[in-house]
Image 1: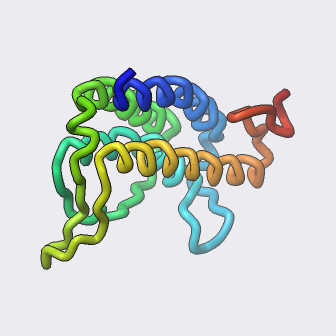
Image 2: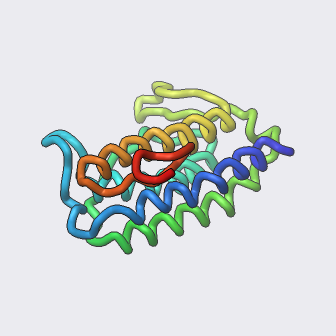
Length: 163
């Protein structure tokens, strides 16, 4: 199995789990946030929905500028779920195009002044940012759900709400 196939197989297991988390967000809680400096639930959910597509699009290039870290406030849960489906489709389309040689090539984030801010192999980018970063935000989102008194779905195993 190629590196891309291996990552895609893991992604295909985790995508429906993430969708379950997103579907739990109550429409009337999109602007809720646990702290004044935190993202709103809608902003975090939208970020969670769009990380996969954003990362694979960036991975198609050898170097990219630093991310802008813009977190738009979605108008509806349907907007979040639609963005999620588009993001998932992008991963399914792009990830299989990377052969093992392409996965080993160096990928960089380069500032305008040409300072290298990050440098790693494409496979490390996809493992660490596409998957691990995605999981970290899903865990963060689970805390939001808990604080909103929304039942938290199972992810790696049972949650306190689902066996």
